Image 1 (cartoon, rainbow over the protein chains, first blue to last red):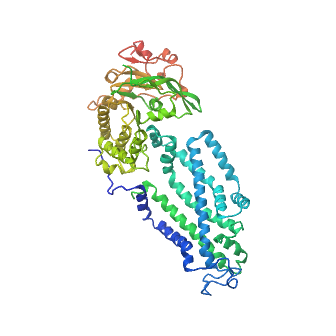
Image 2: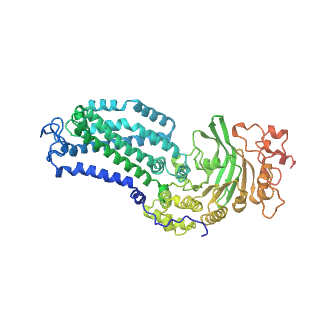
Image 3: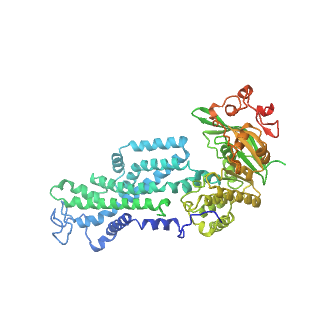
Length: 292
Length: 324
């Protein structure tokens, strides 16, 4: 063979392995993974090491952190154990965040893909529906949904999902509009692939990088949304969450900074970790960056 | 003997902002089994539209097949059910595209893509399909096909990718292989290799090849017969040697004069003045009239028809009247 080839020196691996090779060289992404692992680990297993009821009044109110060894983070305005609240409050927040992001992605990608691929009246119909949801004030609409159906983790997750999918749908549609004109889509049609296969197997994998970033951002936004709803008193009152802690203690922030600050920092670091991971995934799934 | 693929009086129109334009205006072509038909012309002459129409891939809307027929072994393809066309595409009619850089899906390995093409038309296990894909890569002359099958498109050179495209196109032994400028994006040395490969593939598989190109060198290398297209019409059709040696239509003569000849320094290259007119501005006369040195009053008012006046069929009043 005289045909010149760009022979790569390494043996090609499965796409997942290659993505992992890229990902593990990305320091910020690994920091994100470590951070998220600590947060998730603490919410899952923290109560084995530090048992306590977050709702029970156990001590004097507004005990500062680091004074009483039994309550290392102090107590809130009712004298409830903040350490117990921090450890049990992460679970609902993370669950709602992940579930809401999953709902957002499923609705958004499905509608965006169909609109972008088929165009014409399908596009018109789906985009008008999308715009209808987009012009609704998201927080207000979520509040209405949560109050209509009694607040529970699932209704909150669904409410957040229902108000956040339009952005994902528009992003997916834009990617599909761009990619469906590319030659490899025509080539896929030329080998006899049907629409279903072209949408899910040809175009969607190529549209994933921005959607993965969007998904991680959505997890962050959903966590903030859950915190916001709880802050407004619309969360599940029977479940201690970081948002509920902030909401309950916000009036006393001038008297005691810690009952608001600790759950606030927890939310901040969770969203931060998820964003770092999202950026890392974006780079890892981009085949053009793999060789570097 | 009736042709393997016969296109008759095909008309394709597009709705544009200039109104409806006719991209193909009564195109008739045919190709027999084992034969290579060269289709030449400048960009915008309707070569690619003809190919896409044959594949059933004209975007509709804005496109529309306004008339004519495309028959594969007697079966009418114009207006055939989408499911039937899907079954034919890739299996009986396959296509190689111009840009090997962009016609492979960047996120899957080339082996997986060929295997997928195989599995679309044949009932085989994924493992078997991948083995077949490796065998095809070997067949199209890719060294260490085992390893290359696990490469992504961006890891291969342009020539390699075009070989992959050819492997994919012939994976189901198509009866008709449409090659739409398969070497335009490649180096000259690689072009020759791809032509050799296409010739070999044709011998082995007995496929008919429709080679779309604007490169007369490719025609002389590959084609048995040639159809010259201009502004959506076939303006000259004959055996390849006849067109190359005795071009009739002034446009065909122009195309041949554009070929540089090695070792003939006195031979000044002649260009064809002007460009292909926009389709919405085509008038009643010959579409080439504005660029032709033999134009007379009749050329501007009456469309010439493809008929044998001189050596072989050409659509030109000047040839018909014996003026050139």
